[in-house]
Length: 241
Image 1: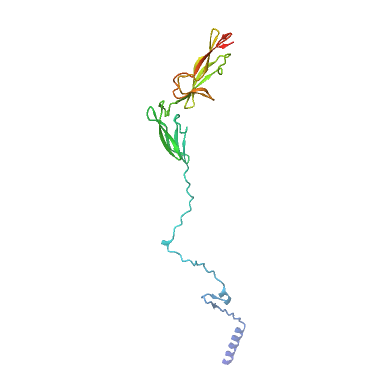
Image 2 (image 1 turned 90 degrees about the vertical axis):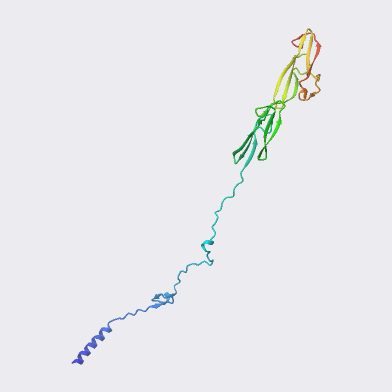
């Protein structure tokens, strides 16, 4: 009886195990220690961080980069003298740097006869002192008389036209003044005709192609015109009719 029971239990166990499917699970450990179920997974390439071959410098040896700067431009400097170097006109010498005025010098009278004239020398201001023969006033020499021109309004010895002698004074500043000196006139039937000539007490008079008779040097002495006479059939208003 007991043997029969043991056999029955044994049969039941055999039948139970025979209906059960056993699943086996195998795991592998890769050389790097990674646990995988498929050995092929051990050969998957891993990303390797880039390591520079240049050995980094210590922090205290790292050179600071100097930022690039534009090349510095040379300043533009000019010197200009308004009116030029002319003792007969007052002017101002000016130095400018990049368009801005940095220095100015104005011509000035040192006394009644001396002028300090400023002028430009390259990009600098220089000066010189002039003696003014006619005096110094308002930062310039007074104009000097250069020569006297004699003008005959009727063109010369022209008896049929009344003429006039005018002295024209030419000055160093290119200015001129006129001084009427004599007019042709009648005395009865005689014409007194004034003409420009070299009849003068001065030794500094000569005939000029441009101005006629002129005097330089000691021009205040004598005259540069003379009178001729002519008989007329009829003389009226400084001319022969």
